[in-house]
Amino acid sequence: MKKKIAVCMAGILAVSVLMSCGSQVGERGAESITDVTNENADAPDQVDAGAETEAEDSDDAEASEGDAQDAEAENDEEEVVILKDGVEKQLGCFVGTAITSQELGDTKIWALITTHFNAITLGNELKPDCMFGYSNGRCKGTEEADLNGETIVVPKLDYSKSEKILDRIVKWNNENPDNVIKVRGHVLVWHAQTPEWFFHEDYDKTKDYVDTETMNKRLEWYIKTMLTHYTGEDSKYKDLFYGWDVVNEAVSDATGTYRSDSENSEEPLTNDTHNNNSSWWHVYQSNEYIINAFTYANKYAPADLELYYNDYNECMLNKQKGIIELLKAVKEKEGAPGEGTRIDAMGMQGHYQMSSPSMVDFENAIRAYAAVIGNVQITEMDMKSSDNYDGSAEAKEREFTRQAERYNTLYWVMKTLNQEDDINITGLTFWGTVDHYSWLQSRSDVGGGNKEGLPECPLLFDEMYLPKPAFYVFAGE
Image (cartoon, rainbow, N blue to C red):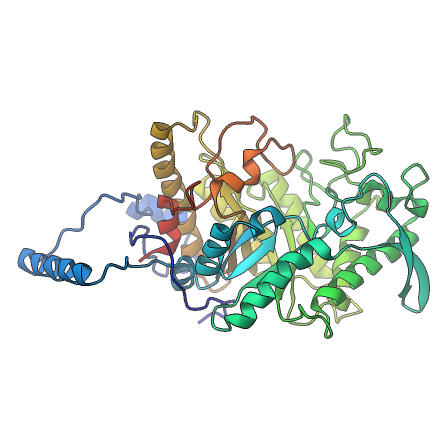
């Protein structure tokens, strides 16, 4: 049996009513999923909450139904389905969700998370702009720090927003040792949500860019400080994190090569932060910063903290080739801590649509990344609505059913590929919990977001905090 990451714990009381859908997948070896589907028409089950199962013996079926009704009359409690138990059973890994400070104060969100998930990604609070106190226009202040025996000047970090969430999780874990929640660090190096002043002399964007030697010191200091503070031996959070996204979205959608400083000609590098253009590339003009980021992460991360690369549009063939080039470049430099890089999994973000990626493209992408890294995770999964979805009650009912069918197809691919010896799907994370908090509700030009401003319903729970049909795809029986 393949070794899987599994941090799933026993479930607690939930608010969902038992339903069942999805399909059980047997081993198929290395045979292509699409070939099997075409030959045997053994496609994933379509979700139909109203479908009845025909019993082989009608008398036994009637007796069982009567017994069930008697039991229900004696016990007013509804039977519970726990998401993390279903994912552990079907996929053999943890299931996570993203949360932000805004959601932390919502007690219903916290109840859903502690019931159904065993991992959390902080949506914004560990990104560079938050760590610099959201002072994107100017550096708030500096201090001295020691780096390899040299004193350097560095920006002050603000841990308060991240620790507000992390302290809540630590408290929960201490009080619920049989139902702990782990955390994914997100993200150390990213072209977006990193203040432009970080790349300039004296941390002043009106001055010249620093040289690569200076930038390497800043990069190493930042990674060292973050990993030491949150995962070091003396950190109160040292047992909380299971992994960390080291580099995020460093491959171009347009060219399929490394993201440059001129992705969008209408986006000046003088902007406080960037949506598309990379000031990392502007300083280095190469992938050196990526290699160095994984080298520094390997140097300062505990041996059991996994290190990841993470990207979106990862099933598009042109971009997929660029991501594979990046992964291979990092793998080629692997070595001991302080000497080389380390990368433990490829993070496929999974911001998908009703019609794309195709089942074939999704399968091929997982295979391609697993061939380089071995371990693959779906890290930010959600589903954009159909083009004609208007949010009305009638449209919502249709959309929820279609969404469940779409999720079911993708999940079937994941479960099937996970049976193969050289492919390990070691994590599944949804980018949020309830629809109305989703990032897709706001217009965004970053990472394939909502550019049209249309209503969205991308997640497993609706605006009433109730499980949608898609929930039961993953929760199973």
